[in-house]
Image (cartoon, rainbow, N blue to C red):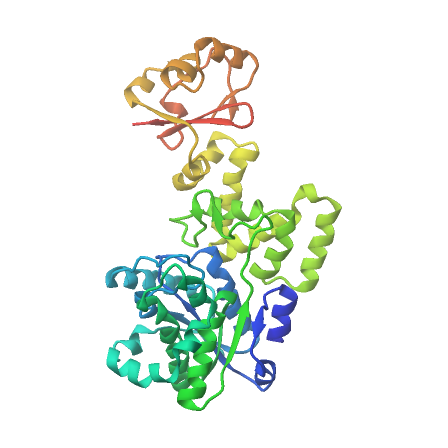
Length: 423
């Protein structure tokens, strides 16, 4: 596979230093991407550099994922309007361990082109501050550092020396990997160009060597909003932070103006496969073929086939027909994720054990509907469902209606839901 051309047709190539294509044509090259431990999970914005490493390995090169135990102590100013809060050592180590485990699920760590995960704290822990500024800092001028966009954009609002030094620390990572691991390429997002080229400059000045930089474009939504965020915040890789259902729904809800871009970047489908899907999608956009293919592909690769099936089943709760048995087959976390934020109420198990008339449950006991009169009208209109099954005015609810022994799902019409929990 031609790595550069693969990135080009996928829309994943923003910039590269001269000579890289010729260097890759000569054979196996080692390249790396850095990840900062700002959280105990990667989010979908991190998947772009992850996919750079995946394609790098598929093209017959050796990938290194660097987790920033040292750089995480400093904080990258790139793309930030203000200085980020520094984390303590224990939190950073926990985040590193979690991210390392996630990275290992994307890359192949065996064979001729085996991937590796390294931690820059392993080499920075033995370097004193004075040694660093004498042996490294003297090679890069302040003028050079202030010319970088990540610095220039912050000079007016203010920037600590800690963050100002970040590009020098990251640059030394590149130098260390070049010197000790024969790593001659650093890959990253376009906002990292300044930090990466500081590394290539250090390699030239400190080691008399030659190294290369390659960046992918930063992804934005068609409406200009930030990619990777929903109303609830980041879309995380860890399903304890973002359920498989919500993860799947993020991709299903991609706009037509965005989905062709996403399916190129986040899946391994070939150019021919994607063009065929686009042709089918164009024939009937309402079927959302591209969105379904994208969501299925990425949910299964990031999570699992079982999680994909769970996410599809959970989606059916809102957008399709489901029986109580099918609802109970879902893990409780996924069920609650589907109905997160809907109105809710709690009733006692003893109260439910004696049976509750549906009119009372809908009105006085839960407040789902404003009055018994409104409840009667809704029931006569045949618009009330309990656990996705239509009910009539003579219905009585009991413990037998509990989903998983804990919840009852009320519904009026297609979109109005109410969750009753039993304690």
